[in-house]
Length: 537
Image (cartoon, rainbow, N blue to C red):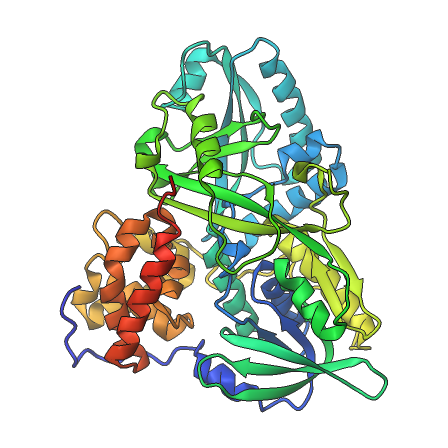
């Protein structure tokens, strides 16, 4: 880490300070909407509610998108496999929301080309037919039509694909994004519209009135230990795979609502798929879909879909899941990947319906979202996927509006630009494009202290100014907040992230006013976390 002169000019006061949002907890006697959960769904609800003018509070017990919402395949898509399963309504909804996200967050989501390589005579016409229907469902919101490729064109578009027996391919378009950064952008967008948004704030109890209706919650600040008694007209349970924990705070004997299903991804060096286009394998040996997608200078390959007995905060990829991904991808690549090639591996949990039959294949369980209103009036949202987060939020707030007799205000998020939306920087600022219109302010940090232009890790574009920005403007509180979700280094190269952790801890301690003891604790905790992202043989 470069030396940081103590006399660097101060940065302008940030507008997303945790301390500022903490003071707001006591400023509203009654919140219109209290949201439990800071993943994609909860943050989407916060944006929707705040943009309608409701007094909105969102509390997340760890960091924003710490769980499933930072562990996706990074795709904004309608779901080709859902079309094959006949879920036309879900696909149509997702394609509509795909277009909206690409429009509302151009700094975070973009069009991505995919190619399905075909090795049997019937595959090309069959997949082309399905993808033409996919385009038809997108209608005027389409982002590029599917077309057939011959073998030479397929190899040209997809360098690294296995040429032996290749008969051609089908090229189509979907979207790609940075999931954790979109989650953080939603948090900032909600705050821009007046919401109070806090990470590291756990709900320990629900408050009820004399009629037994939920009218608030007790929250515990994980940093200070202080408890807050909060009143609200409606409480929304948007905690993903952990919805049952909150439901049991309401009704201890509540039957499980979800079954967690684990999805695993592995990350490989870019030279396994050196072009800009992604590989889609439509039929794996167990009947699923597998993607190999260029992302932030690496290739993300996944995913699996395996039911697990219970949800955990840090699920671990199992050796057999990693081997399945590597072996399946290896059949389609010129150079089959091995365990020693894996730079990082992670697992995320999907909240599937617990009512599904015990023998049902997870790929057949619907990904549609569901709303549940308890007898106590608490509103729970579960299911769905990243692409449809906005529609899910709209449905939740529409229902909350009725439950709490809030002023009738229509949804405003269909064309609402998200925080940072605007002209994407070009030239020297390209590495900061994900910050959108915030990029010039971040660049100002480099003027204040040129040492912050040094790289956090060799071979990656991240600079120390981004660590400072994360602490000052993005509520980053820990080394993991920075290296896993603000910079994504842990997801791209676990060993590189582990090597950067001590310097990041030192700079964070300076920014947040922590001691050397805190630094050492952070380093130890991050090393333990990173061990789970290193490939498991």
